[in-house]
Image 1 (cartoon, rainbow over the protein chains, first blue to last red):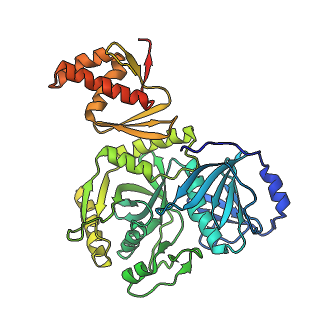
Image 2: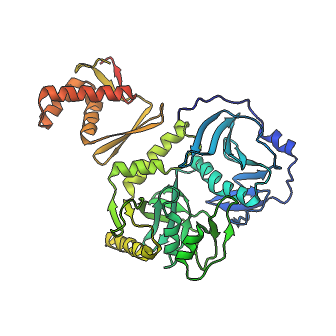
Image 3: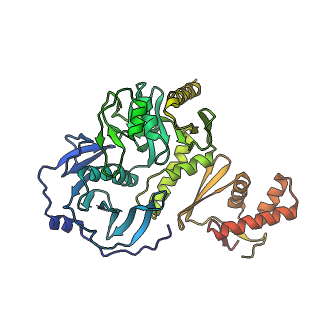
Length: 342
Length: 94
């Protein structure tokens, strides 16, 4: 939040499209989280949307050797080892998201146009991953009440969400529930919409992203998987026989916040209620936000989090990250819900 | 920043508050920072929003809590100064 903001010269998005001489024929429409995306490149991860007007146009420009020019960044997201993995800038009226070494994504202020300018050598799969799993949730953060870093599944009582940061086991747990017939609603990011009867989880798109060792640990037979991105070991598992998916919104019943296992090697999995303040702060930490300087967005998000926290029970879930105890963790959660529903 | 009990304080427009259980979360839109108040701090803020003046808050809390008047005064002044420094409160004319 401390970076100075210096606006670059405005750039006309339409002119850029013309200059790039994009091939505009053959654009197809796809659906992700209720968002209809018209794309000039195939998005095989998504189902096609038929008969709906598009909410967002996605174009991939020809690759370039270097990024076009220096920008005036307003925020940098860093990895745990302090490497910048995503930088955000404002360029004219638009947002620029730069993934170092991979490519730029220029997003129009209203989120209706997205252009990717990849660096030479960035594969299509990586471009699609960045668009689907990094850009889309940030666009949705401006359109929807709340987008959380979470995976969700549909249990008999309703949707339950596993909330946490990267690497905390959200996808693993969601996949584990798929094995007892609870379909996936969303992996890694979850759109939450406030309805008259409470908060609703909006399905994103089929498939989970799993480390190969997780896949080995969970499944008896190995499902087919596809590359997510060239720099990532994780693979995408889509086969509904292994990861069932539900494409209808569902009312959310519980939020489980995944804790690090820390030093709990000798203790069993546990669930405990979160005190309201901690639940609120954890929701803040796990909310996607395209522009952390946008006060109207922050205000809307603040209200949404307050409402969500008041309406939905929030729990802390702790367990050792060991495949052998995943069935016990799953049983604990199922029993916990059963007790709460009685 | 000198604070005395006769000062009047309020939450500025750019600060959002949300009561969560018996605690309060505050977001300062100017800094983008989130803060929280424990139950006693929450009671302080609640009374301040109603009364405005620190002296009125002091009188009420003296009735509600088992604390010496001087100790309560120094605690309230310290909390007020801290919140003023973080932009969570501003002084007004009273």
